[in-house]
Image (cartoon, rainbow, N blue to C red; front, side, top):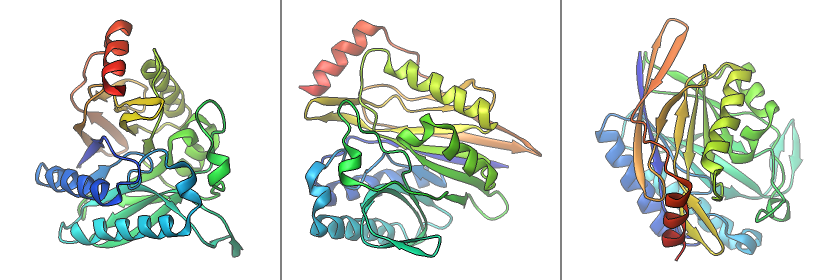
Length: 286
């Protein structure tokens, strides 16, 4: 059984909802024709990271909802294609039969014109450049959906960035039946951060026994740079895929499953030197 996953490492513009939506549509269309049946986009891909006090405006949240609907409609004709998009959500959300007000940093799974699943980020960073507790409430659930064509479905558990740095979200997804973890991210660059991410995700896959695909943002936003370098890890912690840093990229990851064993494979771009990373970060930021 084989599933092809496209990691759409995109350079998105904060507040350009129409432009970001079109970029996602274009990437997903290209990926579908290349054989992908699951496309992952970065954290808050609809609105860009981070939109700061725009998150507090009801009209902005409504516009993000409309942009998600536009993406779903545009991709409705692609049978068996799932696309994970990041966006803010607002209003009352029913959790354990209780209406909980608040806004959430969410990921929606789009399939054939519909939102088939949604996940709300559970761990909200509030240090360094992060201020997510100002804008969002923590989610409380899990999201596991099936990706692929009929007869070759893989159960995918969604996590958002900081969630994957903690044990509970990944463990809960595994207990809910996930066979693979898909993590969408917007994680600022500093020297050595790429290796730190891979090592932390290695600890995560070894703890839960599941392979992991990590979709990361690329671009410059105010004082932060996102360097991309998306990757995938097999369940034994080995690197299965790595995208180049500091440029947009569509990384196609092949998921092969035989009985209970799942193996990921793709192109692996070598790590750069620290000096090269600094140079590219400065160029991208400027």
